[in-house]
Length: 196
Length: 190
Image (cartoon, rainbow over all chains, first blue to last red; front, side):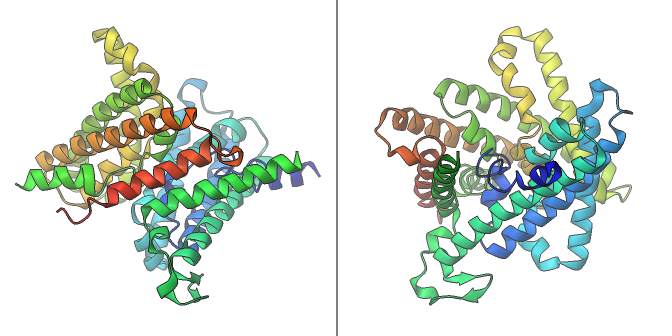
């Protein structure tokens, strides 16, 4: 039960994007379409789970003073792996996410979980924590991507819902990212208040 | 002329925060007061220019000659992290007054994606060193411009009667969106 709670906390209650407001740059920058948002979310999830796993394995070996640089090296290693695998097998996704893939390394969610959770907990709960927070992040990005894609071009996961001529282009462009996220956070705040 | 195009494009047309979504965390985090926004801008400008120069040299004199370009992400982030530490130590000794103004912001800068982002963009756009430095300075100015305008907006919206559900972060994001729309008006200049 406890591990289940550990897993589900990332979706609504401690959602990294909607509630904790971390990792805003990839959230806004890669959610032009739902697919891109999902891809970015899953890439980050992989890095998060693997770095949580490795950090919790080596937590007793690292001297306290150099722990942050050590964590950064671990994270950067997995980011490089994601970068190379994506370039080889998903070139079109790699192309559209562009700069934001190497920038996973400075995503505060990943370093934050390594420092706040994985360096203090067991291997199993660190991996579950990484999965939960990662899926919460992917979930948030997919929601925002779907809203923007639907309002902007009338499509959802590339399937036409209504004619593209009626779409509001601004939601695909930069301003729409900020505005859509603002309204989604307002809704989530309201939901969280009702549950509490 | 080349430099003027780089400067205008980086500050207004492709503003680093409002158009490219780099450095959004400090943009939302330290924009509650104009003074802190100015301090953060100073620290970012300082580190961004230094980091761009150092990473440019690493890319062209270490990574490319030895054919280890895939180590770009790891080496750049380590260089930026140690550079921030170094700047902190040097500033503390050399200029305590400047350290007092920028000190609190420096640790936050390691995880500011604008720094790493600009360093990588300079390599991707195949600038030479001088163009890279101009690009870094212009982006720092663009970051500062967006941050300071936004801080001013937020100081005002705090005093207004905002609908209850939108108070705080949501209204800040929506005003950032409107600000981004204003910057869209510059597209097509260069």
